[in-house]
Amino acid sequence: MIKVKVLIVDDEVDYLALMRERIESWGYDVVLAESGKEALAIIKERKPDIVILDYLMPEMDGTAVLKEIRRTDKDLSVIMFTAHPDVKNIKGAQELGVSAFIPKLSTYSSDIQATLRSALDMLRKRVKED
Image 1 (cartoon, one colour):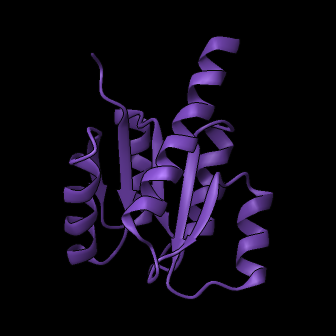
Image 2 (cartoon, helix red, strand yellow; image 1 turned 180 degrees about the horizontal axis):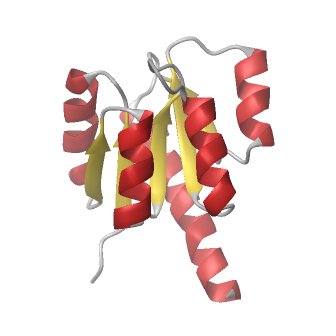
Image 3 (cartoon, one colour; image 1 turned 120 degrees about the vertical axis):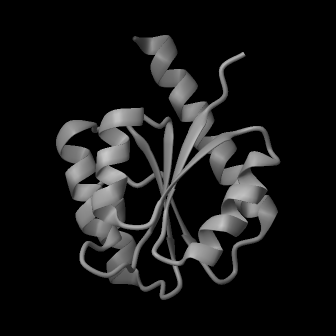
């Protein structure tokens, strides 16, 4: 059985380690990136099924990364986290086709797991349609 590959992008190394442990325990294959540029290279090379993307990062923020992703892949499921949710950020990400937008500081395991399942369901529907 092939595992679903999840790319987690965040500039906070401790948060990446925590998320990797949690998401791998649910049976996903996890790949990490500490910057937007690194994430884009990994997406091109490793072709993840789902991306979990931090909104606020230095050099290249989540919206800039999402715009680059959408230039080459309009269907890749992207879940965005932020420690500072506001309506403007959420609306901009939604316009770029983000699958879900979750406040980073209040993310519970059940929220993340449910969001991953939803993104996986969308992925399966696309595969069936192709």
